[in-house]
Image 1 (cartoon, rainbow, N blue to C red):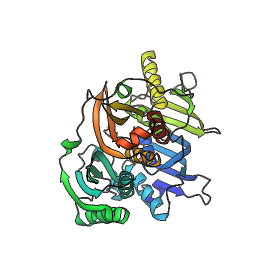
Image 2 (spheres, rainbow, N blue to C red; image 1 turned 45 degrees about the vertical axis):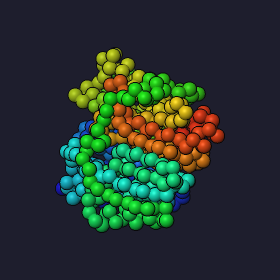
Image 3 (tube, one colour; image 1 turned 90 degrees about the horizontal axis):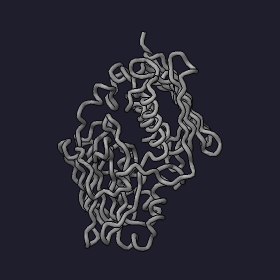
Image 4 (tube, one colour; image 1 turned 45 degrees about the horizontal axis):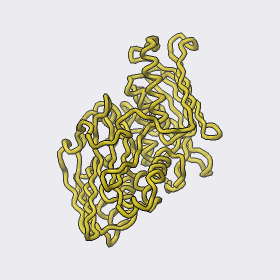
Amino acid sequence: MGILHDDVVIINQSKNEAEPSVITINCPDKTGLGCDLCRILLFFGLTIVRGDVSTDGKWCYIVFWVIPKPIIKWDTCRWELLKNRLIGTCPSCSSAFGISYYSSELQSSMVTDVFLIKLFCYDRKGLSHDVTTVFCNLELNIKKVKVSTTPVGTVMNLFFVTDTRELLHTKMRQEETYEALVDVLQAAIISCNIEKVGPEVTACSQASPYLSSAITNDVVLRTSYNVSVTMDNSFSPAHTLVQIVCQDHKGLLYDIMRTLKDYNIQISYGRFYLKQGRKCEIDLFITQADGKKIIDPSMQRALSSRLQMELLQPLRAAVVSRGPDTELLVANPVELSSKGRPLVFHDITLALNMLNTCIFLAEIGRHVIGDQEWEVYRVLLDEGASLSTPKRKIEEGVWKPLMGWEQI
């Protein structure tokens, strides 16, 4: 007998907004499953305040306690959509239940269709953020973007996107996208065109010589928060215990899970707590892909160092001078599976909107920096705004929302 469809993911919604909702996942296991699940929760704007995971290597049982962002309206349909996405990423559940949205390991390695949305508009404050919000609600993932403002007050937006629902090739889905944009932008829209393009337009390139050293160098931003990562092989005869104590930030559990996934590390048991003062404690019992402890001291040091770096600085942000212009640079590491961090451009545009700073040009590209692939956001700020707002204020105003350290 197989597990029932409704039992794979069970969501108990909290009746009190201040209390967490509980998401229970019971499914076959795979390396990196925790990363994939946390990525979906991050995309949906959920904060994980507690987590438990247990697996025997074949079957896993995971519980997340989550709280939605206050700015996001959660209704029955959105919870149901989240449930479908979580079910779709669980191994074997996709094929067993006929869900085609998120696929498992086999389908995730397939090339996803990329579409170009050409959006020609009259410029106005908050335009880029409004567009990215529409795409988030439609589950369109921005892979690359070029935003250009003309001297006559118009903007050409080129968004290269993939569709989580894999329906953007259909007339109905394209009409849904256009209507959603019109509903938000109204008379600002001049024209909108959607067409399929080749995947090569989002290909990764070597690091541009024009990227600032603040992005390309391994320099950790000054912060009063510490990250402690310790490893111990004495607590369990079969597992290495990893204990992490750090300050919470947006996507913390996702950053831990994606790092372990990139190292092909398996979690047998784990527990995550968010304590008072945003302090987090994480205990993980892990093994290597061969099922053995991590005994090699060099491997322990490498994994510990990588976790510390990723938790201290999961993203890099800098405001630099480019001749007479001011440019905002934001970069985040890309998973080995080629997935980028969710909602980064959305949060950048929201932060700039709150700072009353307008975008003149914007680009998203992928670059190899060192031995890792990074997604780099380059935003040329409007001349008037960049002159009136101190660079440090812009940098901090963008960095804090990206880390979830400031409610906006």
